[in-house]
Length: 196
View 1: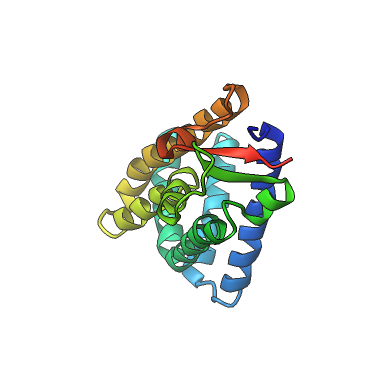
View 2 (view 1 turned 90 degrees about the vertical axis):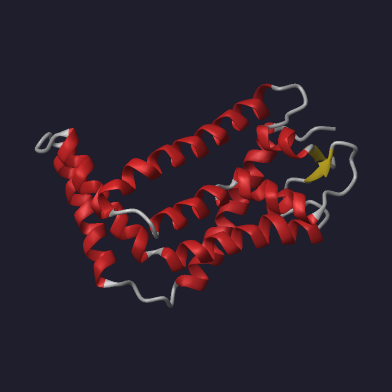
């Protein structure tokens, strides 16, 4: 029987907080650079100026692009750790737990192949990479090494848009399709089933 949307949503929220907890625990001891602190404060100031109508779109994009670039450069290690934890949790841990993460186990659902057999490790990793933004983050990290700060926002924004669009379309598909499959399920020939 297919998993209900609410089961999948609650499962995702549980897993999301577990990932945040693990990543925060690992990165807690990584010192924050002065450049990051300054860029973070400046991003807040720029946003306030824009929202108060004190600067226009072009100045906002120009200044915010530079700040975003600095923040991205200063958080590469944290981003890499987040990617590794995400793949390890949703790909490897779920593989060894027969298609279940902690959230899925609590909600009594699991990921299976379309024929109800166990999903392979590689499929779970690629499924994770697509739906949880791993591919987008890896591309962003690579691009970060090769472009200038004034081009960063213009290159990254379309990538982020595509990732958000993919997730949003998958979300609506899970909610409204009879089989409850999202794009990632169709792409990797998987489904999420209820064990109740």
